[in-house]
Image: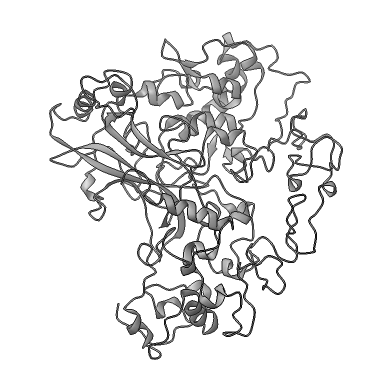
Length: 624
């Protein structure tokens, strides 16, 4: 269970999705493999599923190539089948400012205005994003820069003199409190939860005893939010409003958070948060770059590759985080399935793709009808995040050993636990109804124990084939200590482990004491697991999953074995509801015959229904 057992499948699926190799033989019916299904239908086949048969499609092995497709200049490929590639010269710098339109692979967010380009001087409050960073600069009432004369020695008082209300907003946010309301949790709904107190995960387990390390990513100036005598003075404005400060911020000798050698430019040059500010913490969660989330890394702040992230690449859309994670009064929407608090109850936790892609959940939203059949039950991310961990992410952690594999015993030195990291991974797929069962400190872990996998979950998405949409997740495991008698996951003192003796037995004893147990309470080592929803690293539409990626085999997802699409009885019993046993044909042929042609609802053959599709019941059923 250490690592990813589908490594070879990752490579195969990626190659298939990029059309570098043909799908395996088992994914293609015999008539389709021949390039001609005239024996069955009298019509040529559309091999790549782009809506054009091989008679009209100049490359029927590439779904991005068909008559009328968007042409990419200078790539040597005739996408629109007009007989020639679009010459690069046709993609010009229309406004002559030295930057071309994103459609040409450039980074000019308005190629009709010579005053708008990456790095242009921003004009505050005019509603125009001159420097293409995703936001306009806030207006000021002064004719001169109000920050020009500020000194770092007066920080944060000089910020609070004008922005005390904003500091008050921050103090009420989940970013500062590390606690919040939990309407999306099925475990102790209504109880304020968060990493400051009761949250348990498969990374550093719990914050108990380790504010000095865990608190380095808090948006305060060093003190815990529940211990700061003056909360407003503890708000660290610059960690979000100056990216140079954010990149240098560290725990200082006096326990405060700040910059070792600050200068006045840090308070004089402030800006709205950008990706670098956000990722200075969010990309390094869990102990290092890309360790925790699997779809965020420091490279996300500066990458120029659309294949790395179609939304957050500086040569393309170049979106700021808050373009999707919209802030109101310093409270933000959006969170993963493994995060407990909802910051803004009035707006909820979901960031919807439909805010920008307004029609994509309709029956006509995509050009391919087959895709439109899926939108009610399959999340956008499922098709548009075909791989994750473009920078290697942690897939397994073991506190019994240090990072070099040596035992974490009395002979050890402090350091990070043993971890395994992998890159370019296939997601794990689960139905999710947007509620989760996440572990809390003091929980009876046997409540969620999974005997099939012998794992003790710390975060589980709720839902099934009848409840929720299919989402992609990072799946990660860890070896953690658990009390033997009453099954409580132990919040070992990670500061003792990481910065103190490095002895895991000492760290566990201290953790037991903090939890109210004797230091010698018997315990066992158990395997925990967690699911973390994937939302970033969206690939270009041309690289989205194709039908065969999911329906051609079980390398990517086992629809029948894992996800609930099995027949409600053995095949022969299901078939004779309406007719005798038929020739054993491919899934695509059988599915199209019954659903597309006969308009039968799924419940005729399966244990679930799809009422949103308006299909018919045939009146014959088998007892479940």
